[in-house]
Length: 429
Image (cartoon, rainbow, N blue to C red; front, side):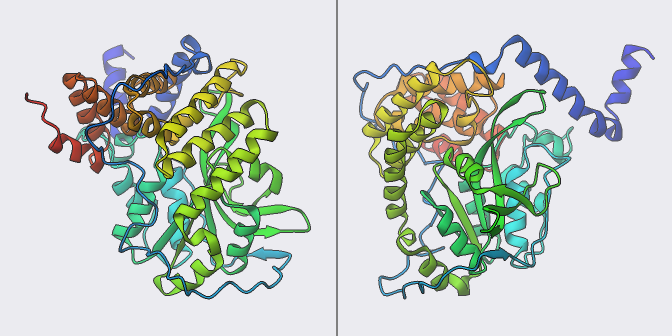
């Protein structure tokens, strides 16, 4: 078969859908072989802040409890009853949803499970059409348009529940295993974001971020019962408490609970002090500071990173920047092995950008975004483009700022933060 004819056959929709996965996988393998992502490092410049930010960008990680949606409970909520938890819970009514045959579908698949538990009639593609609509290329089908969107942020999932369903969602940091068990024992499955080491589609074992729907626990075995949208067998997998905790640490112990509006008071009663989002940030900060004193290596990196994230949530940006400086110094000193260096972390978490930006450390924002893109091999994270664009604008480099913000919207036409700034900033002067 001639090259031209082969190319035409490849573009046929049913052939393209079947083979494009393999083609992209091969391209990524070659890219990583030439430019190993674990060898890239980011070293903050620090120093005296260039200036105080004069513009306030729309944060891409809004408070997980938007005003008017899942309101902060009143002070007179009844306290949760201190009854012993059962030794075994496996919730009924769980509908398993996988993320296979899609690009980066962990978020839509897991959120679909959390909503379906309560009777939602949609599916993972309904969610993806909103949270990862993909590039506006009419020559590509819906699945292929979303290939470049590497991650769905918790804020995007929260926004979907708020705007497109009749349910509520609460998200908090600094969670504990005992709190998860209490929620599950009371009938509320929990969605967490965690990291794990797994062979990826390049054939290498590396750290990746992952959502995990947790629907039960077994005290006798010391295990959670989870629905894993990616790993097999998937439904009702078992994860021992220690492994679960270690993976959860890399996302500052973030957890989310979907529930019907009528259950608002009950959920917040179970949450106790976590009902107040600010209190959850304080708890997460205290946890990170304790772990910094006891952990080493990559786990200490995660602890410092979590400290920075919690300080950002508390709007203590200068301190947060210093915490991230410590985290990246540890990162630099780790072995240049992609099974150790979690080079994907800023694919999923953007708090360092906020810390450096709001500290006036614009060049560090640019350098961190460049480092992040180097680990991917292409500029394909709308959040990183957004923060680099905002930093470029603050540095007076308006052409580059405009390009980044417009590219962020091209990657995700529903990315409101970039749309707002394109309208707010004057690129014509």
